[in-house]
Every structure is written in structure tokens, then in C-alpha cells.
Length: 428
Image (tube, rainbow, N blue to C red; front, side, top):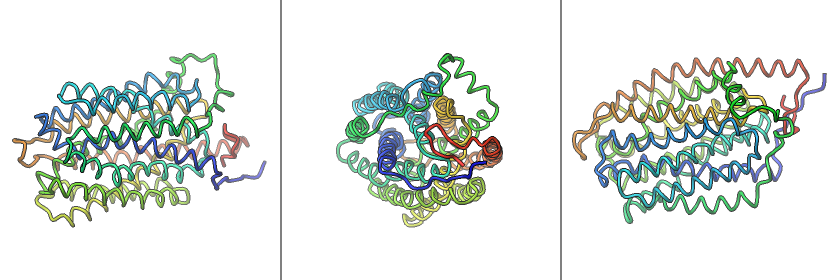
């Protein structure tokens, strides 16, 4: 049997790919995340109820989920760079539409358009990662790529909130769209085609058959469910984060950017570290410990009343540490499930079900959380925290099954001496 070789270092082009994917994630996450800190402002400006605002958040998630399912059958039949550019261009258009929306119906429609395109970008990016990087590298790669989450909080959200306080809630969407145009141009000129998977793809398989084949794999379905459960708790809590901070914790609109900045900086610090260590220690163990850590602080946070800013900051940082430590190992583990020819379809379906589950969660959150007047405290926000606890415990059990499937697959590959992935790297 051939000796195993583990490829660790990144070459110059791979570093460029990581940067470009991080930038695309930054803009997509900024567009999505900005809804939460602007929630209180949007609800008051457009006179929306918590239920209506929850539907605006759900519109993105539902349309993203539907789009991903429709795209899944075609995801492995085209150059992944071309797919990325196509959906990114639609995302840019949708974000501009958000900036030009000034009624509830317009905002709902704009979020739907943005979701149709933006919701697929993450799955295409993850397919590119799994094509170009070995399993032993992916924790670090995803740690860097998902730094877009932290960067959007450190740079995007505070600047966006400052702009919103001066020029209105719609101005941050205009900022996100302009940044996305610049990133689009960089991807066009700096990223090479990603089409190695086409050389081994079964071209006779129709899009529908490819979709059904991907759904039919039991191990894939376990991964889909584990990812969907990950999104439910976050989607239930996130849309009303700023309204809870302002109306319940008495954080001022001027202090709100500080909360997101500090949380974002902690994300930038912890994500690369978590990514690095998730490649060195057991990913399931890291996920399980991080889940317990996160749930403790979720329960504490959702039961707070009027609280000093420094305590809010400390709890948010500690909670963010747990969230990041769950996100990276779970994503890396699930990415080990699909075969090379199924990666695009798997990632599309995975992202779709995640978005749909999140859309349902946001809508339900809007029904659970109640606000009697536009300035009164939110009621039942702690209920959302308790629901998140239950779902997260189930999530640990599901990811345990994912881990078992991935380990079994690695063992089979080693036995068959089939250690080379579609990009020519030795996987194990």
C-alpha cells in the first residue's frame, strides 16, 4: 500500500482562492447579518410588527432554499467559477433592490430576490473548497473563509449602523452592493476555472436524476439534517437581536455598533484558531464541548433584563467563542461526506435545507416573540433560548452520526488505496 501523504501548506494561488472566497462570504454575510442590527430601526421606520419582520428575514431563507434545490441537479455540470459569478451577479442586483426599498412589500420582494441568488453562493464556495483542498486542510481553510462572518461584524456592521443613523436604514445595503461589485471583478480576473470535477462526472445523468441520487444517499441525508438543525436556533434568535438589546437590555443605538464590533473582533481572533485546532483534534469532541459552552451563555443572555454595556459585551464574546467553535468543525465534518462527483449537488441541497429550516425558525421566532408597542420590551425571547437548547442537544447526536460516516469512509478509502481526490491531492 502506498504511504500516506498529508498536504498542509498552501501555495500562492490557493491563498488567492481563500482570500476571494472570504471576500464573497464577507459581502453575502454582511447583506444577511445587517438585517438583525437594523431590525429595530426597520420595524419602527416601516411600522412592521415582529411577525412581518420575521417574514422579511424568512423570505431570504425560503427563496435561498428553493433556489438551492433547483440548482442542485446542475451544480456539478458546470465550471464552479462560472456558477459563482452567475449567482453573485444576481445577489448584487438583489442587494441594490434592498437599498431602493421603502415599503414592506418592496423589502419583502427584494429580500426574496437576494435570497434566490445569495443563498447558493455559500454552497458553491464550499464545493470549490472541497475540490481544491484536502480534508486535512479544510478546517483551516473554512476558518479563514468564515472569517467573513467576523469581518462583516468588525467592519461592515458598525459602519453600516453608523451610516443608517445618518442616512437611513437602506444605506448599508447600498454599501454592501458596491463592495460586492469590486469583489465580483476580482473573482473574474484572479480565480482560475474550477472544472476538474467535470472530467470524472457521469455526463449521462440528468439534473433530476443527479438530484434524486444525492437525496437517496442515507449518509448524505444525515449530513443534511445535522446542518439544518445548526441553523434553527440561530435563525430564531438572530432577527430580534438588536430589538432585544435596545428594548430589553437598554443598549442605546449609539452603543449597538460597539456590541457588534467587539463580537466581530472576537470572531476574527477565534475563527483561525478554531480552524487550526479542528484539524488537529477530534472535530466531534470540539463541537460537543462548544455546544455546551454556547448553550450556557444563550440561556443567561436571553434571560437578561436591563444590563450594563460591559456585561453585555463579555457575554456576547463568550457566546461568540462557542458559536465559532461549533460552526467550523461541523462544516468541515459534513464536507467529508460527499463523493467528488456529488459535491456541488450535496452542498446546494445542504445549504438549501439549512436556509429553509432557518426560514421556518425565523417565522416561528416572530410568532413566539411578542412586542406590545414599538418601544416596549420583547416578551418570550427566553423561550427562543430554551428551544435552541433542545435543538442543539439533538444536533450533537446527529453530528455524531456524521462523524461515524466520515470515519468509515476514510477507512474504506485507505483499504482500497484510493487516497487521491479530484484535484490530484492525496486525501489521507
